[in-house]
Length: 293
Image (cartoon, rainbow, N blue to C red; front, side, top):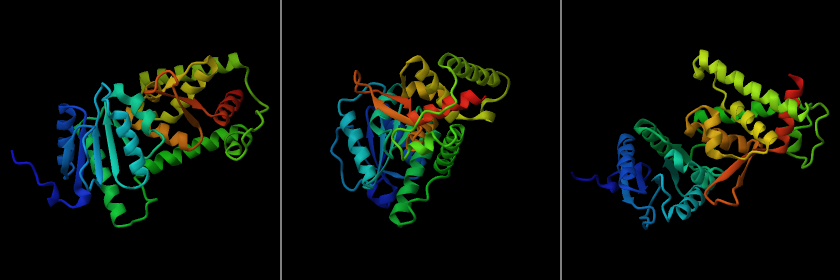
């Protein structure tokens, strides 16, 4: 079968594919074709990049490739500098190490995606690249990203209101806000949190889960319980608590970090993993909320 000439497409429609194994290569090529693009080249993760590479699709495997960490760092820096757009597709076992490298940046992370989801992610990447090439307003992003940011801001305002204005919003400019005057006892808080989680699980047994999609709240509850019990929650575990597709959960985590509700910390014992915690203002907001219900 004759391969398409990568130089017949415009730079915006040409994608560099970096694959960890033959299966990833096949999946990546299928996604590129479905999005109406052409492969600039197909390389192993440690291959030398041809120029130009306006868009990059990465297909990772369960097992970590020796060149993976360096590649992810390069991708993050390149997207931040607006040199190219990137989509990283990874299986669920790779979520923690990918999130550790890319969660704080603008790289699009797609987890456990089917062919349609892969193609959609590639198409969105191409759309972003076209927009940047014609110098449209860079603040005009996908509707889904705007919705996530707006919902995260609404949730943050709710938590701030629960503390009477001394919690989340105040702490963005004040490093050490006073604790809220109204807080529940620690043992009571844990019981309340577990009851809230249990109620949400019971509700899903009787009604379709997509009718009550609140991944941000599910993750807040999970991290609040972890704070009360002294547990540490990895990114992959938090994605499970969100009760939504992992790709969606990753976007929510990133948004909530940007909004100052979550903070990510690397695992000192495992360089491939990171944990997520509530920020102090978010924890204060949760405590005040529990004291008022």
